[in-house]
Image: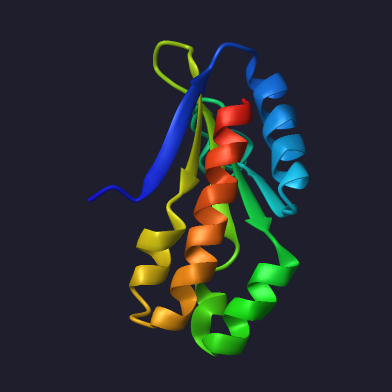
Length: 128
């Protein structure tokens, strides 16, 4: 089962994170949280890990619509976009597939919202 869409980019990790945040903003998303997985593992586990950031993205208007249709939807928000350094030092940007995520709610009222978010995430990834 596919649950993400992704692209590889030819730039530094930090530049990829910055460009991803900018592209999300261009599509109406704010980044509510930015988790530096590498730093967290180093601090909490004393383990080294690849560069890896989880960006919790939220479009307030779409979140409002979704929460009106399905109050428990908040358990699935924000939508995550990850930027990570692959084994070959290539940088990958991966976004959750909103249709797969929202599909678990079995609420057809959310389908148009999922489609809208999917289209926006596709444009984000294409712009990178």
